[in-house]
Length: 363
Image 1 (cartoon, rainbow, N blue to C red):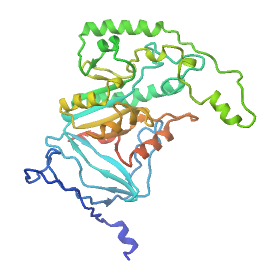
Image 2: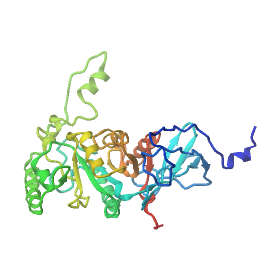
Image 3: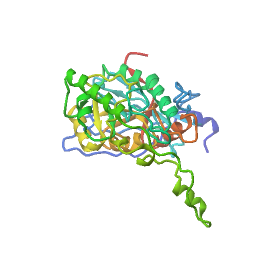
Image 4: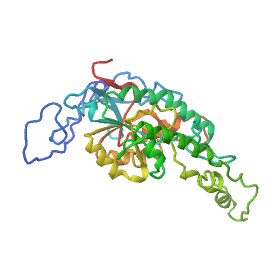
């Protein structure tokens, strides 16, 4: 049996690596493209007294601490790398968090913001009264998400935009003529005049809608033998349809949140166009890596068109763990919900944080 002191020494977990047999095998050099096969040496070195993860924005996400943390060898090492993206994942089998350095070519990297819905942000689309729900489901929580966008995501986009290949956003709704002329999309670049005209149309359309729905029910029938089931059937925890939101609410042209500084070359993705169209566009632009930000960690961030469940099938995806918020019912803060959902995602995804995304050469 190894002595307890050995537990604090560097050890190596030798796991049989999957080896590809290429038609033309060549020696693997540093930074080769992923088409070249290589063996990854899964050497895990214990980290001594590491600082908590995701600790820079405790108002939005509860810092993550674990009993064991390890460092693994570099995973992505691009030629002409100019962006350092340290990341981590959790492994039950390794019994701890594993941190992995990465060196990316920024021109082959896209930053995608999932569902920056412009609700209750002054553009006109707002939570219906008296009982409607949209985005984080109350005006107060929508304002908190807007604060997160201003303080965390928008500064990150501004910092990375000059380096990365693309900055993109995904939104719900049909491919409507207003947003097609307000933002650059996968297949259209509007002129400055088109953008100005569309902005006026958007404001008029959103402010013209009647944001009133029905009030909460005052009474409803329940049975004697199953009153709990009947109660929730008549009065569920979330109803966001026509009853409380009003007919036509979800057909409005949802804008990108006003807290995001959108630049002309940023690209809007419509969810309805589907993942295959997004995938093809990214590949045509030479994108291999994605830094994923946005909302909501437990739903849209993972399962919509630009969510990580789709993107991670074809791209190297990094979830920016403090640049996302989970929905947080029954709580005044998203801290714990975001922590929980990012932690669960880390079983099969790499997670980074704003402070770990650095231009190589800058500390």
